[in-house]
Image 1 (cartoon, rainbow, N blue to C red):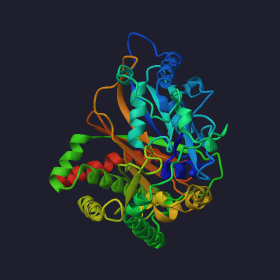
Image 2 (image 1 turned 135 degrees about the vertical axis):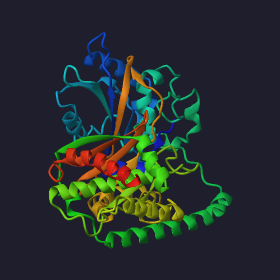
Image 3 (image 1 turned 90 degrees about the horizontal axis):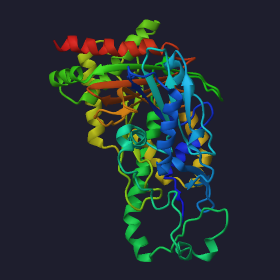
Length: 464
């Protein structure tokens, strides 16, 4: 049975991957220890290994395909062994271990995911780090994968694999594939000739898509000519082995709602204003002047993939581009500026403007992705200065081997030429924020994480 092609955007993520800037996202879950028994990191790793075995997508790897030159497809890994992907780590400084592991590229010849059980100090909570290549999952799919490893997910029936995922062909299925494409060793989809009437009927949609792509491309070009944000958020190009820093902050959802009720807008607007205020505080602490053009934040927006689109099960992400008002000293004025900018973005829609750059992947043939990836990776800094993403999370009590999950910090990939990626997720009335930073350019990530608390306190004081 034919393997499932990577969607255009997933193919772009796969080709953007490099040793110095791996394109994987992640999450760190923090669990309370069971007072009745010590933490058994090896036992937990064995439990997670068994659960990962039951998730069909986690048994697949990326293979090149002959049809659609330059493309790739998900295919069953004939040598899959989940023990190659799940590991126990013992480190006193758990967050330093997370930073080190997130900087480490994954084996591209195996299913692109890893899980680490991190056992810290004797009395400290233990942590589980889940790494997934961005080609495998966006934020929502990453939550689904992570949930399948927890007690609640393990009690539910395993999700069925897609027709092309890992299942043995049905009896007689091979007969449905034309003989000319049944070539050993090649992963070729059976492609019937298109109905001419369908081709003609689809022409208006193709014209609209081409026009939209042209509009997005023009907006991206204009945005790349705008002055960049603070130099402190830039990072030198590193060919490989780049070090990372990882820091966290946890904000009370009730505090964010209190600001929202006073000032209007959305909770996400308040979070963006908190990020802007924290960047201002952090720059002042470093002795940098926050005046001048603020950093350009790329804010991903999940989009539902339409039926019939090549690689229809994969990522489909658009985004908004927002210049953060770091130079504004008044916290409420910063929030008003953020709200106005986000309102403009929403009025225009997520399928237009420079933030929708990811949608251009649909307009690029597979082979062009391979040649364009190095150029795009090197030019990310021309479009945005910091990634700020909000990852949806199941807001129900979760456990692993009976131990309660208390915190969940998402981690976004760090683009080349940038020093900071900010990821947020809400769990149990707290907004957990994970900061992944380039160690050379932003060694003081902990200072920035602490500034998030200060920026929220400043907003609360201003609200009275």
